[in-house]
Length: 471
Image (spheres, rainbow, N blue to C red):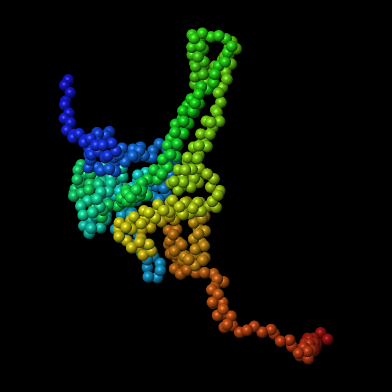
């Protein structure tokens, strides 16, 4: 059988350069397809940029736990667009932003959309979404792309474009009539900034169009976690050393040692198998087990130390993951509020302001996108009802507003906030004191008037007794 010939396109040899100078492409790599063209730019040339091509994604449970905590928590928060009213309150707005927050695209729910967005931000430092517009030029859909295969580029006249790739739904032909204008090559799109929702985290070295993931700031801790994990696997698989040694004062030959080892192995395997039994040593043979050293016992402490460093970088309280005592917080609400004051609050606000900028909203407090964090307290019924009761009793919420927060209908006379009667401002108390007459003490009756009243009472009693025949 004759093997078919595969024609390999000619690749120009890279021009030799002085050591330390950049080399023009193409470069031979293992992905994609063995060739990386020079048009991909410097962001993916990790061998020239001095970056580790192995990122922090996968392999470390604590990193995945932190990322999933952010993604699953924020995905629970429903999004709405709010507008300030003339009376100082606010009202929901039904526009393109609110509609796309509820239904981002045909193949993703609101939870899928936010969950994937946060994971992209935490693992890659960037999140790219291509906007599809309807006939009124309103955004009707958002389509996510792989942040590791997408990037921002500077086009002609200093315009910002995005080179996007990594969406199998669009690659399969969905929306080909609309997205064909953006296609530059197979499964790659060149999109202007006005149609790209780009969220990014920390930027360094002046790369303001490229964010960096949090794990890049905890590289040492992540590497240590991986090494400790591998060490623990090896240690518990083989105890890091033989489980014990057999001692004897007999002089054994090489063949006798091999025979004894085989018999011990057969008996030892029987300990864990069904119907097996422990090995029996004879002729003065003694087994001495090898215990774990203090150095190996310190691996758990070292693992705890590196975990704390990762928690600090991601801003996740260990109590959120159940890795510390929650008794330090009075309630679940206080724990969530503590997290909201740090990492979680920043991430939610970062996403909200990103939507505000893309949809050209005025921003807080006039018109803005809000992810409702009250949904995080939905399982805590007691804390939720106590907060609503205090809001109603303090005159902050009306009864109908509190009932609406619990998806309950309105009741008559429940639209107006109310307070208890004894709660009045000091100015009202002062006015009431001025309007009321000054209190006066009752004057004591004269001495003669008192005596006359006493005599009159005695006479009336005597007259009554005579009238009824008792005398």
